[in-house]
Image (cartoon, rainbow, N blue to C red; front, side, top):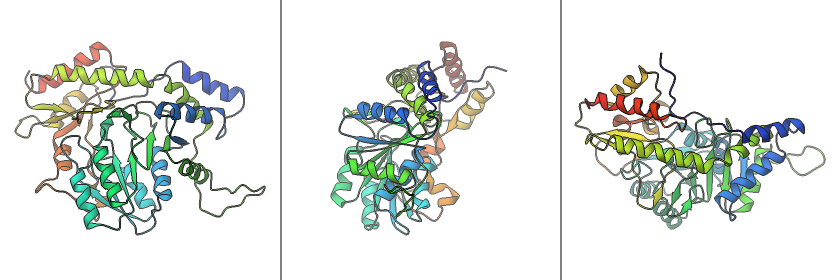
Length: 376
């Protein structure tokens, strides 16, 4: 059996253990402490001094709190990307609200601004928009921003997969009224599990910190006037994050290098394209994805099975939320007749191994195997 080649596994360095050990040595293993403060300061500095951040237990928790802060309540409607992981949409249902799912566009695979405009015309009472930067590729954020401002609806930017990406020179996570980040195990940096809520409005972040610590009022006794949550990041986990931040730029550089290797390797395969992005966008290339032309005899499953036989991990494209049984009753908005763009990408795409620890030999094996399926 060949060694396991992962899709995108955590990459640890020496710096993380120093912060974790310090937490143990000082007995600050409980939630909050120096590492939480330090991780927030590091991220705030990275994203720009005009934003504020709250370190939380998960990116999903950040979306949940973000929607609460934006005023979403039971039976409200929230517009959301359909082509995404379930965690982008599930917090809407946590609140008893109703997702209105929006199709993708072909330029970035992200929320189609035309479909968003149509969704807001058909659902004028919607309370928020959740736009995702899929696989690290920025959505058409300026268009989406403009539509939201025009309609007077707040934007939550789901940048869980796009930390380190730029859109017209600005870091993703900063474009919404609220942004969220994820540090789950396979993200560009990891804290094993964790996330952050981002906003240029300090009051929003103060509210997130308050709600994430059980909404305890500043009284000597335990006083609660609102329902809170146990969503704050722990001091141990934050220590891993502080160490990982030192290597964020290196991780992005290596992810982009993997993308370039695939581009060069598949240049002579007219049946193949990689996940696209707009001019002016600089994705972090968290995952490089392949799209196979509809008239090709090769299907994604054939490639995944060929790699699987060599103990190489791949992944299908996210199954769109409007095709998921749990969201079968949700309204879905598209502007293209026939099959949706999101479903077409799901049917024809796959995620290629994008682990920054892959050796030259690993990449050669992956590429040789994929080309072999195409008879090259």
